[in-house]
Every structure is written in C-alpha cells, then in structure tokens.
Length: 499
Ligand SMILES: [Cu+2]
Image 1: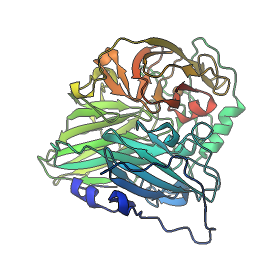
Image 2: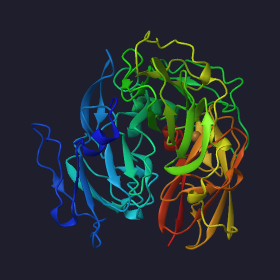
Image 3: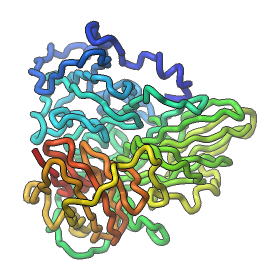
Image 4: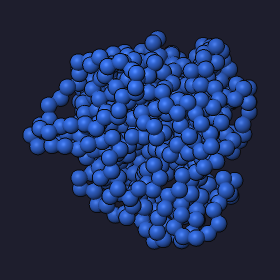
C-alpha cells in the first residue's frame, strides 16, 4: 500500500466489511480455480455480539501467490495478491470475525499479535486450537478491546518468513486525530522464492542443532545465500548480534530497494506513520531524511511524545510516529542492523532529485530504542506491587545453533505458572550475545524502568535484564517467546498459564 489518506483507508474495501451485528456479511477473496470446496470446521471460538456491539468481518485466504517485489518476482505464500495485505481494520470494542480459508499445501493458523483477546482465538496450534489443515476453513472470533497498531501472521513453523502477514489496525472511537494523513509502513526481510526458502534455512539450522547451555555464549552470523556468509560487524551496536541471516532483500510495503514505494503528501502536512516490523530475523533502524519523528505509541499504546531522528524496531514491535512534512523528495530508510542492504521508500511532497538507496541519511546515527521511552499516563497499569516475581534466563548460541529459555527448549520447558489476579513481574535476563525481541501473547507489559511503558514485544539486549510487569487478568495458556522466528522454532519458547 502506498500513500492512502486516512479517509481512503477508512472507506477502502481491502477485503474488509464492517456491519451491524444482525447483518453480518463478509467480502471474500475469490477461491483459487480448481481447488475443492473447503471443509468448514466448527468454530470453537464462537462468540455472540453483546447488545450494540459492531461486528467486523473478513475472510483471509492463505495461498501460494506470486509477488513482484520490484523487478524481482518471488513465488511465495500470502493472504493477498498484494504482498503484506489485506489490511484488517476494526474499531476498539468490535467483535472481530475472520474466516481463514486455508489454500496452502500445509496446515496454518493466524495469531493476532498484541491483541488482548480471549485465549481460544489466539491462533497457536497445539495450544489454543487444532491446526487449520489444507482445504479447511476456521473462524476466529474475538473482541478487540484496545486501539492501536497490530499485525497478524501464522503461528505455524516459519510461515511468517514468507508473505503471510498484514497489518491490523484497531481504531480508537475517541481518536483525537491530530494528524492529516496516515501511512502504514510494514518492514520485512525477504528470501522466499528468490533465495533459500524459510524451511531450508530452518533445516540448515536444525542440522547443526546443539544443546542449549545456560551460560553466556558468543554469537555469529549465518548467510542465507550460501549459509556461509559469516561475520558482520556488530561492533559498536548496542544490539550485539541483531540477526543471523543475510537476506537477499529488505522490503517496505512489499517493495525491494530496486522499486521503492512512494508516499505522496503535501508540505506542512502532519502524518501519522504506523510502523510494523514483520521480519523474521531483522531489526531495523528507521529514519526519514530531513525530518524528525515524534514517537507517540509503541505496540499500540501511547507513549509520552518523544522526538527522535531515528529509532530501532525489532521483529514484532510497532511504533507510531508523527512527522511534519517538509517540501521536496526524501528517503524513508529502514536499515537492517548488522546486515547488508536496505529497505527504503520515497516521501514526495514537491519537486527535487529522487534519492537513491545508497543515499546518506545522517538521521540514522544514534537511534532511539524503547528504553528511552516512557508511558503516557493514560497507558499505565494501575500502580501495584508485584505478587510474584519470575526470573527468566534467555540462553543459546550460534555454534552449535541452539536457543532456549531457562536452559530448556520448547517441549522440554517448564511452563511459567501464575495465579489469576496476580501482578506478575518477569525478569528476563539475556545470557547471550544476541538481542532477543521477547513477546508475550494476550497481555501488554508495563516496564517499571521506563515509567510503566506498555509493550507486548520488548527487545532484550545482550547480557541485559529487562523487568516487565503484567496483570494476570486474561486466563489461558499464553505463548511467551522470542520473535526471531528461527530462535522460536529452535526452542526459544515457553508458556505462561493460569486459570
Ligand atoms: Cu531470539
């Protein structure tokens, strides 16, 4: 999606329909010709709208699709013929009803990343549902309680490293709307259909899978091109090793650097930019040449407005910023940390020379990370001392490639068990030389060291400890894992559970 005004987004089709509770209907993607009629599964998450509750419906059709990344054609899997679409948009309090019609050759699932939904709709096969098998339909139903910028993706293997992701925007019915336009900017790292497939990369990692030790270990880097491209400078980056894989392409809104997306605006316009990092293994630093960002939200929740020339965004994180557009043509750059290449787009408000991908963007120096943010008072968890403190160690290393939590891989892990109603303090200590974006489903932490900043995905840097408080008010079995999908699949996952 290129430039779309807020109004265009609100009324635009994009496979989404909002209706009254009694008149629900959905806009479906036409079925792929030649495929059999799907089996419709019962809906374990069926919910009845409460009086006056709006119902927002959509159908997602994960299928094999071909994408033009900009002169580069990639056969992959996605939800739409437009990579990184369809945008799903609802209003806080809506009952969301999404039918997933699986046309993939393998089973799938959809996880609604960051949404504080009922556990049964969380989209984790083997934990909250059966996998959606090829040819089956599955319906997710949940109330989306909190406004913000989210996204959705499978929780099945390394499918997120294909084209299976799209933004999920929950609008605030009381949105102050102090902006003139809105741009959604989705970042990704890309190899599928042009380099090694995500499954091949995972298999190569597994082939050298070792034992997770619970001590400190050095990191390293693996290239996806030949699995041998070692050694990128992590020197000087506070993130240490930020990712393991050199991707052939880095994308903004589905476009490689050869044919960047263009955002068109007017000088003086105030734009809200909603950034989503849908990458599997890449942390980006983001800047808009010649401009200053005001960060207003992270992971959906408002922050104290904070100015930044650039910022880090890890896998699974979201940042909303506002920017006042200058007059001219500017590069919007997302540079993969510790890797070669760049994702970029063009912001055009007037005449000027179109920049090139190699353009120097001084704003990229010294980026902000979430440790420099604090919560807006409207976003604070009620002030309360923790009832329980849980210490979590993040372990692993590159050689042999192994990642785990508390010295265990997922499957051999000991779940984190808490009690309903507790205020739980997680202390996550990273014993490795890599950065791990740790994500908890169904909850949003408050970070006491950041004035209570709300996050559902927090980057834990090498040898650092992050303290994160949660209110146990959403019972179920909730995944807690690294959002580097290869780390997660190799074992860096566990669950937090209570009834
Ligand atoms: Cu990790």
